[in-house]
Length: 483
Image 1 (cartoon, helix red, strand yellow):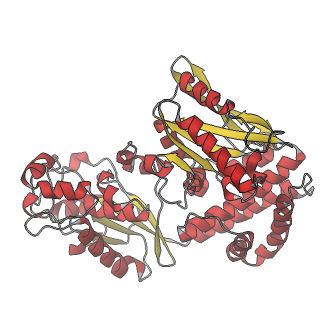
Image 2 (cartoon, one colour; image 1 turned 30 degrees about the vertical axis):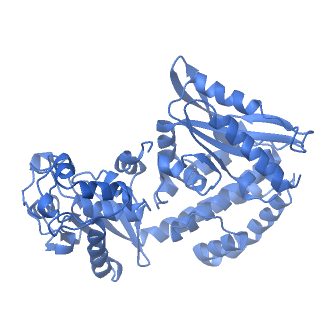
C-alpha cells in the first residue's frame, strides 16, 4: 500500500470503531496525521470524540474500540499501538509506534473546552476528517479574539510557565461512580521534546496571530510566519526569524537534538511577542455594543418597531464606568433611556438604522401565534430561508444591511474614540452572528443579554470581537444542541 492508502484505511478503521460506541456523536481526526501527505504523523494521531454523556463505561468502551484495531491489512505489521488518553501536547515519538491520542468529551465538556482553549478548538475546526457531527456544529469557537492571547489556556502566560518549569501541563480524567473530573499534571520534557515544544509554542503564537488578523482558519507556511514575525516585531524581527527558521528546519528533519539556546530563546520570544502584541491592540479603538435594558414587553412576544415601551431601571445590573466619548442609539424609547441611564455624561445620537427588526403585523404575537397565522414563514425558516415578516415587515438580511451601513459610516471609515452603541436584540444578533461566522440560519439562537457591554476592537478599518469567553458561551448557549 502507498502511504496515502494506509492513512485512508487507518482513518476508516478509527471512524468505524469509535462511531459504533453507543452515545458517540462525533469523531474528528486533527493535527499532523491528517495535515501531512506521508506517514510521519502516525506517531500522534489526534482523535477527538464527543459523546452525549460521559462516564467510565463510555470512556472504557471507546478505549476498547481502538485497542481492537489491527494492522494486519495495512502493511505496517511491525508497528505497535499505544493509546494516549490524556489532554495536552504529550508526545511518544518512538520508532515503529502508532500513537492514537484519544481525547474524549461529552457535549458539556466540549463546550467547556471551547471556552477554555479556543486556540486548540479553532484549529481542530479546520479538519475535514469527520464522522458524525462536526465540532463546529456541536459548539463553535466562532473567531479568535485579542483577549484570547492573554486569558485562554495555551495562551502566553501558560506557555511561559511551562517553559520555566521545563515541562508541559496535561490533564487526565478521574472517575468516581458517575462523577467525572479532570486532574492536572505536569510531564517533564527531555532535551528533544523541549526543543520541539519550544518551536511549537513560537509557531502557534504567530500562527494564531495571523488567524486573528485575517479571520481565516487555515495553515500558514513557515515563510508566511516569518513575514508576520517581521511585521509584528519590526527591527527586532530579523534576529528571531533566523533562529525560528533554524528550529523549523530541525523539526522538519525530525532531529533529536536542538541547540542549547532553544528554551531561553523561546521564553524571550514570548515576552517580546507579548509586548508587541499588547502595544498593537492598545492602539485599537474600543466600541461597546449593548442591547437595551429590559422592558415590561420583553415577555415572549415579538417586540419591534410597533410598540415603544420604556425600561425597567431596577433590572439593570451593569453600572458603567466606561470612558465613552461617542454614543449612538436606536431612537426607540427603551434604547434612549438605557443610554441616558448608563452614560449620563455622553450626548446620545439617535440613528434609525439601529432600530429593532420591523415585525409588521406579527408585532405583539407569540411564536405559537405566528406559527398558527403565518405557517409559511415557519416553513421557510425550517428550510433555511430568510422570509420577511408579514404586512411589510423586515427580514434578517434587511437588518444586517442597515447595520452594515451604520458601521461603515460611523465606525469603520473614520477614527473613533471609545464608542458605545445601544440597540436591539436582532441587530446585535446580526452583529455577533457575522463577527463570529455563525451561519445566518442560526442567528436566532444567539442569546443577547440586556444592558451588558459587548466589547469590540477597531483596528485598521476592521471590527474584532473581544468578549470574555464565558460571555461568548452564554450567548452561544442556544447553539450547543444536537440537531
